[in-house]
Image (tube, rainbow, N blue to C red; front, side, top):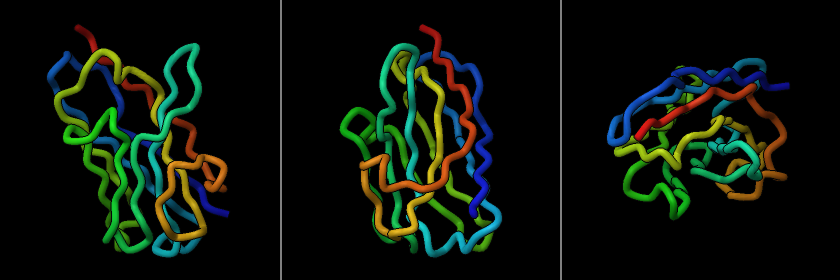
Length: 124
């Protein structure tokens, strides 16, 4: 079992930046692909970005391309989401998830383990 804990959420003005972290424990972190998803009120869960087991390949959703960057540090069992040029429409609860398949995918059903989420609020 892998436990995931997100941190770094908060409130920021439009145009600002936040860095989310997701710390993993209880498994072999370096074997998992990691993904970031978000869910806004009244909407379904949306893929934001993913990174493969080694960090050599990343996959960003079109809605965040050029603004968000996903990275990982396998020595620290942590995956990050750097969010720049934030917009009010980025407001959501952000979740990290682990996929034992090892390769990044936007398919949320491929991810077996999920964190509890962290709130990001962007004001205009």
